[in-house]
Amino acid sequence: MQVMDGVTLMTTAPTPASLIALRQRVGWTSPAVNVVEQSLANSLFIVCAYDGARLVGTGRIVGDGAMYFYLQDLLVDPEYQRQGIGRLLMEEIESFLRQRAQPGATIGLFAAHGKEDFYQAFGYQRRTGQVLGMGMCKFV
Image 1: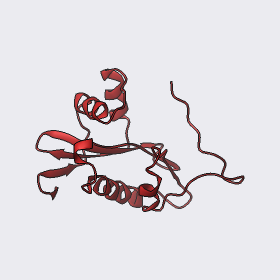
Image 2: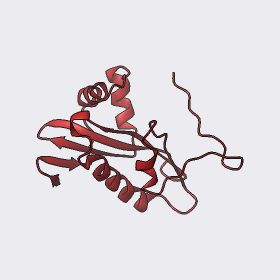
Image 3: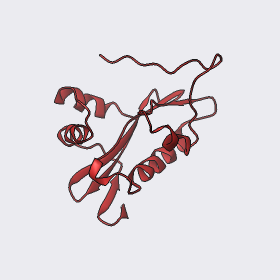
């Protein structure tokens, strides 16, 4: 579906090469192509933004599809940032989650530093304090 001038959203996986190229444009490293391929195949939901054939944004949900959903790899090409593409990707992700996540499910994410307000606009809360604990991760 075309969502803005020249930009189309699709809910299919990008090619591993196009995802790796987008990750490089935003300054992220990537594992080997076969690992990216397996990661994409194991996603619960993927939405991509294309300008023509160029992947300019993506976001995906991983998890068990029942109790736990995790927003992963919400990326927008630096040349396309601040044009509403991230918001459009999130709206598609939130639509998927409204259909799949039942009461009692947990939807998690790790926001990049300085991007917390973006996610708070979609109802996500900072997870700190004695009851909730501190969000943590480990990079291999």
